[in-house]
Length: 147
Image: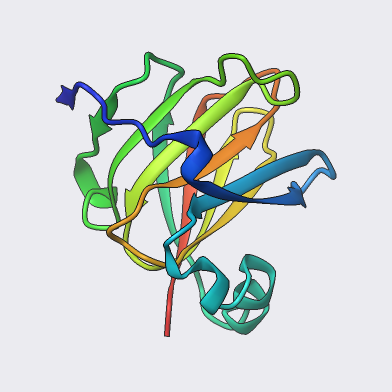
């Protein structure tokens, strides 16, 4: 089930540039009033959680319109909704993934097997990943809980 979106205003996002697993530039962000600046970075959290085994979810999140899609199945308690769509008017990144989920360390893996890490610092805020990919469908989500 999907709902018409109140997709977040991109001017309200605090962006951070990063490199994907395959060395491709991407960026992630959260609302500027979120606690993103008060938390550890995705890289720091990934190092701290390296000893913990992630929970792996197999999904099939295809590119759609700019509306929220409610998740179902095993991933629903972790990511409640997402939106994967063309990043319109962005000259750098083709795709935008927006999610709402539990606090923790996520890795979104597309059909090229590239991975885009995202630290969700505030489960009440929308968190965003912008990326380029020849096969943007998200097929796997790895999650490691925040401690």
